[in-house]
Every structure is written in structure tokens, then in C-alpha cells.
Amino acid sequence: MSTLTCTIGADEAVGGRFTGYRMRRTGVFLALAGNRGLRRVAGGYALFILTEYSVWIAMLVYAYGRGGAPVAGAVALAQLVPAALLAPVFAAAADRRSPVVLLAGGYLVQAAGMGATAVAISAGVPVAAYAAAVVASTAVTATRPAQATLLPSLAATPDQLTAANVVVSWVEAAGIATAGSLTGVLIWSGGVAGVFGVCAALGVLAAALVFRLRVPALAGPPQDGPAVAAGLGASVRLAARQPRLRLVLALLTAEAVVVGALDLLFVILAVTVLGRPQAWAGYLNSAYGVGAVLAAGVGVLLVGRRLGGPILGAALLLAGALAVLAAGVDPAGTVLLLTVAGTSRALLDVASRSLLQRSVPAHCLGRVFGLLEGLTMAGLAIGAVLVPVLVHFGGSRLALLGIAAMLPLAAVAGGRALFSLDAQAPAPVVQIALLRSLPPFAEMPAPELERLASALVPVQVPAGTVLIRPGQEEDARYAIAAGQFDVFQDGRFIRRCQRGEEIGPTALPGTASLVARTDATVYKLARQIS
Image (cartoon, rainbow, N blue to C red; front, side):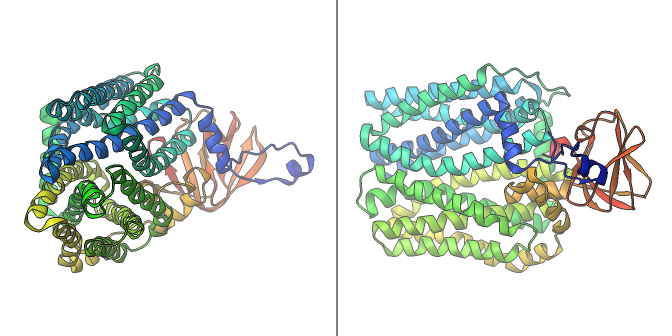
């Protein structure tokens, strides 16, 4: 289905014979609704997000209740280290195996691990509960690589793929906010074991949604272990040669440390500081997640803008919210401050990742973001270990202040270099504006939109050039940035197209061609960038 909007010739307008090719935003999502496979993947992912965050919160609550911050930190570390080590293996498997097998298998292993955790908690065997939780958390790392590989194989059109990616981003933001409340209610009504039991059932349902999907294994040379290691080594060498790249990676790693610490601090805030039941750890997580949802709307303002100021501002706002929490506030104030913290953390993440995308050559992006994933997992683990240490030496207040100080110190230490990098990194403002005018891309989250805009390839088309001929490859699509094009079928003028329109073979009648009426500029859109 196309998003083409064209100027109708006078003869077509008078006769009313032209039916039009315009697709509004609702049309894109109606196209997604008509794709059963994509609906199933999105539904499975929604269930996955609920379970991923719910059981993480619940396990920290359980471990904290058994042995305080030291035990909770150790359990968090035990869950993160295997996941970090196996994440590249699962990513490579997604490239050379059927992604359906990896996705459904990952969901089933997660469900088995969560079910075993529920049984172990009910039986009063903490060590078995911790071990089963490690199995579940390790299997989580199979989901996103498999899904990223699966979506393009299920989409019938580029518009469906775009809509699917937008829906997935919405599902994740909403799921994080919902998971906290769900966990709180389940702990209140049935205890921590109830959280794992319910999430195990949701995991089985997620596997059932995607199990019957049929897509072939992707073609291409397999990536063995040495190839994966070589790619990681190349990423490390690239970062070592680029001081400013190291700066952004360090800032994002510091952010991961804060996030890893916050997961445990929510439990401490609920139980120790506020003196509330364990269920409140889920409610505080929910408030933090609501802030992330709010940031999704504000983040669009960062698209195409300079990012040094927003990065520094978001870091200081997050630190300020945590510092005020250390001073001691009532439950309502705590919820409000955590919402602010969630918003500022999400904005910091969007701005920092966007700056990283702008600063790294396109052919190096995959390697750099692979390195970033490893650093993120390491940062989460460090944060989980750091909180018990700070609590031991100075209680919950020192823990909050210590975590609050990390991001401002990192941002201020590299402030001048950060602004220098931001000034030199190109912002694809023209390409972003063009994509925003196309319905399939209008609702995309800010980082994805900038990534797509940076990948657009400009093409200069002299007047009289035939840009699209009958029988041309269907994946050739273009966004018109300047100039006009005429559509001809069997030598007869059909209509005229101009700036802000997407054109391609699938948008034209089978025997039609597209000819530049004037000198024009178009940007080539490839299916895979959607």
C-alpha cells in the first residue's frame, strides 16, 4: 500500500476517474492490522515486556527481603553477567537461523525459568529460585535480536514494517509503566511467587502467539564465534582511536550504572525509606515508567537539533530529582520525583544515542552499538553492586546521593568536548523534515527518525530523466525533496507528483513510468531502513 499523494490532472479531476494513492496515518496502521503475523509478534512482545520488567522487580524485592541490599545486588549481578555474555551469541543466531525458532524458544525458556522460580519461592528454597531466575533473565536476550530479524520477513510492504516498528516502540514504553503497577498488585494479592507464576503463563501465551509463524532462515554466511569476537575487537579499537566517541560511550555507560542502581533503590525507597509494603516497589517503578512514556512525546523536539544542551540538562535534572529524594519526602513527592527522574533519564538516553548516531560513520554503526550493548550490561551490573556498597557505608541517603552525583560528574568532566562533538556532528535537518511529511514516518520515535534520515541517499534527477520504468524492482522508493515528476501510462499523462511525496513502482499502475518534469532532487528509501 502506498503513501503517494499527487496533483490530479484537470481531465482526471473533472471526470472523477482518479481514485488516488494517498494513505493517511490511519491507513498505515490499518495495513498493519491486516497482517496477522505482525499482529502476533506485536502481541507477543507486549506480553514479553510485561514479564521482563515485572519479574526483575519481583526478584529484587524477594532478594532484598531475604538479605537486604547485599543479597539483592548479588542476585542482580548473577542475572546480568550470563545475559551479557550470551547476548552476542543470540544475536548471531538470529542472523543464521529461523528467527521464529529463536523467538518462540526464548519465550518458552523464559516461561520455564519463571515457573521454576515460582515453585522454588513457594517451597522456600531461595538458592533454587535465584538459579531459575538467572535462566529466565538469560533467555530474555534472545527476544530483541530475533524480533528485529523477524519483522522484515513478515512485512508485506515497507509501510507495514514502519508501522510495526512504531507500534513496538509504543508497546515498550507503555509496558514499562504498566509492569510496575502489575507487579505491585500481584505482590499485594499473592506475594512474589504469584508474580512469577502469572508471568510464566504470559510467557507461554507469547510463545503460542509466534510459534506457528513460518519464515525461512535468512541467507548469508554464518557468523562463527571468532567473527563475533573480531567484530567486538574492531569496535573497541575504533573507540580507542576516537576520544569523542569514548566520551559518548562513557556517558551512556554512566547512565546504565544509574539505571542498574535505580532498580534496587526503588526497593530500598519503598521498604526502608517510606516504610511501605513490598508492593510499593512496583508502584515506584510504574511512576518512573510513566516518566519514560512522557519523554516519548517530548523527545520529538530533539529531532534535528543540537544535543549538547539537552544532554547536560537531562543529566542535571535526573541528578536533582535523586538528590531531593535523598533529603526525604513523602510518598506523593517520591512518586512525582521518580516521574521526573524517568522523564529526564529517557530524554538523556534519546539525546545521547542520537548524538552517537550522528558522530559515527554509517558503516561502523553496527559495531559501535554492539559495543554499547555490552557496556550497557556492564553498567547495569556495576550499578547493582554499587548500591549495597554505598548503603553499607552510609545508608540509603548516601546511596541516593552517590548515584545522583555520577551523571553530572561525567557530563561536566566532558562538557567542553561534548559541546564540541555536538557542534561538529551533522544534523540531517532537511532529511528529517522530508520524512516527517510522509505518513509512515511521521510517528516514528526521535532516534529512529534520525537514523533513517542519516541513511537517505540523495539523487539528482535532470529534467526529462525516467526515474521509474515498468517492471522496475519493487524495493526502489523515493521521497521527492524538490522538483516535479509526471506519471505517464502508455504515453498518456496521468498525474503530477512533487515535494513531500513518496514514489515507487508499487505506487504506480503496472505499465506506468515516472519522468522528471523539472530538475529534481529525491532521496532513495530502501525497504530495510524502514
